[in-house]
Length: 403
Image (cartoon, rainbow, N blue to C red; front, top):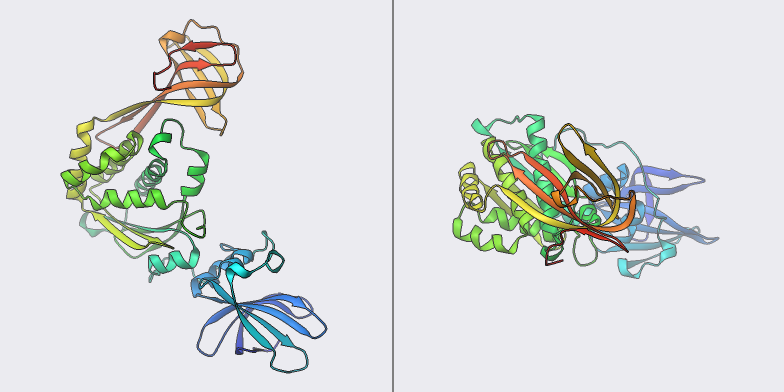
């Protein structure tokens, strides 16, 4: 193939050919203004070839090259919601081109669900000049979250274990915030975890700067992680202001409040400040930050609620085992929910004399979850106690009135 690709909308200079079989089938190119395109051969006939030319940014181009964005998504969701549908005849005539909006594309015109490239990235290492979070969100059709931790003495270094603990708490908080308050009594639903999982997407120059992006893509109207991220930003925006934080807390679940306290404690112990910048494909850009002093003030408000949180979870699944621990004079249980969540802990005193037939399938368990927070380190300890069990023809233990 020559370096020039002649089309009805102008000559294109070929950048990189990805698929060649009796001629090019898939390649990147750019026009005279520098606009880049993905060119995908859609149909072949005796008279000529039909192509889709999809305008792409550098970020989208790199994502498709490396397989982060599939070919189907590239075609189905163009960054500007449209692409060029061009026919190039073999007789050398000009051909024709039409602008196609994404919602007019038919299934047979799209690449298969598994069609992806897998080329090594062109850019390595630290992101020195990061894309704007809103621009990145629109291009990737994902929520983007930049986290910057300000460290003592403006150091650019932080222990890996400590950084991991902060990020784990951010993720745990988002899971809790994304769970509707009425559905909070129980394990975080599987679909909530999947749609709100954050992925590491790079680092950038800052005190300690980390770029995260959501695992799931946006729908036509919103993103799966929008609820949790919006509440996360609202929490940070209250700063350490007692009145604002006190107004917001009642709208959150006890689990979310406990998770926020855990994050703040970890920041306080490390003498860290936190800045977050959220980019949404639909809601623009939003930023907020907490200085170390604001972290301390917010903690003072939250600590009025105490350091521990207890709630009863109602879970359907299977009681796998009940065993005795003679050395510590206690009985242990193991329960697996329908979603695969595994609970291990103690039997309540009311159940220690009950004879269980295990495994017991398709039963409902009432499990008390206790989250204890170490105020000095921010470490969480979670313990479970089985307090009630109900099957088709039996019922043992305690059952809270609200259930």
